[in-house]
Every structure is written in structure tokens, then in C-alpha cells.
Image 1: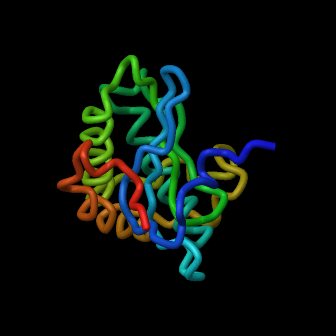
Image 2: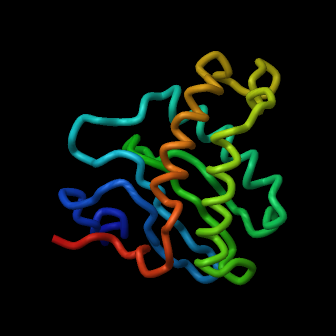
Image 3: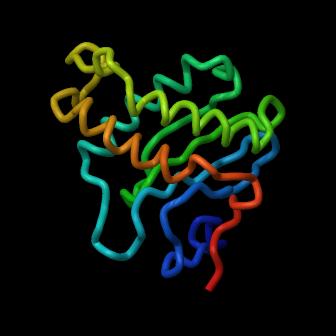
Length: 155
């Protein structure tokens, strides 16, 4: 079998940041890395779930919502994937969208989106303050990010 693209990234040198993972036609996948892989320092289920609810809601309520395909956690528990329509957003536009959404999420003062038994199958582990703290940290990390920094680091 062919190795999937994410398995070709050298995880021993990967640090938190924002990376271009792949392009599949018009579908572009960004890797939003929060934790350094292979250190045992993973995001908790509550962090993953809470950030997912908050950022997915922000993205899907943005002016660019028609370009948003998916936002969700990585199976390795070190970050998130953001998929968008590259025919509607440039990489620079997508970076700016993420910078704006994470900055807005860091100061969000409404109720946690989707925090009810009707809306979510695991609503009890959602924590708005935890999500806001994670979003504030990541917003600061990517504040100056540019297209030139989207490449994965190399050994």
C-alpha cells in the first residue's frame, strides 16, 4: 500500500504551527498543530472537543463559510485539520480566516455552541473557558503566520 501523505511528515522535528498538509483538487487541508508529536504531551479530549465546537462554529458563521469544508481534531490528538475549497479561498485568505477566528474565539463571551444533549452526543466534556484559553494560545502562535511558513519543517 502507498503511505498516506501525513505519514511522510517527519514528526520528530514537527513543532506547533500552521502547515499545508495536502491539496486534492480544490480541497486544501491545513494542519493546525497544537502539540509536539511523540512527546506524550497530547491535547485532552475536553480540549479537542471544546476547541472543535467553538472554532467550527466560528468558521461556519464567517463571511467565508461557503469555502469551509471541515474543521476537526486529528486522530493523533496533537491538533486539528481545516479543509477548505481552494477555488474560493487562497492560502493567504485561509490563514487570515483562521487568525481571525482563533482571536475572536479567545474572547468569545456567549454560550458554548452545541452544549446540550440534543445537539451533541458528548456535551458533558465541553468547557468554554478551556476552549478560550487554547484558542488564545494558538491565536498568538499564528498571529504573524504567512504562506511562506506553511511548509512542514525538515530535519
